Length: 254
Image (cartoon, rainbow, N blue to C red; front, top):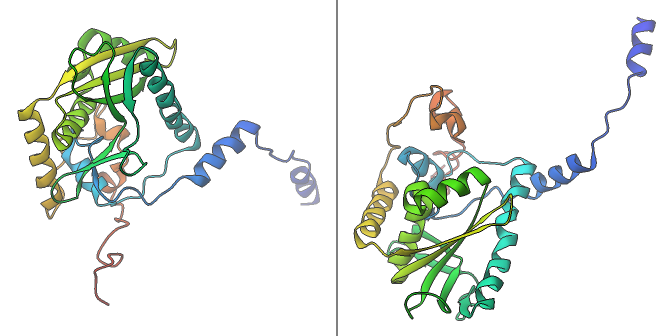
């Protein structure tokens, strides 16, 4: 046993790398509370069950530090894109002048909406009206697909997000501006407001907000299924107990 103890004591102490410490700091600082409304950025997802569960915070989603740092890439790119548009003669309002904060839109119930990146007009835009502006970053493969197919087909979530914003803010069109993170290439597209799409999305949001029980799973846990990457896989397949339930509800009685 003495030999065994000496062998264990001789093991080198594990030390975290600088990158490990940085990612750990991102993880520790992330906000776990989540938004209080159903976000327009996720309303276009294929699985309505995922949207329903996310709105009700059934499971607290905590991302790894590296992913959180990656998310910041998009945040840091937005001011640069605003500057790019102003450089070519556009007028961009990236904050609401009435509040001094990011543009907020909500439906009549207050349960569905989101935060717009801004509004833009002038310069080379095809019409003089204010447009919604939506900034996104893509990896190389996603960017090539966007160039080939356009935003509605290649990124339906982004399309539905913009249609939600246009419908709730009464804007006639949107400028979608995307960056290839690999080589800094840019893609822009004018997306016209589609009344039928906007009405479809708002009806979907209202239905999911009012639905008393989660929708059925539209997929199965097989190879290639979206369920393999879903944050709610444990709840849907492994019996994970919901973190928000009758005992944690603020309106429940003792």
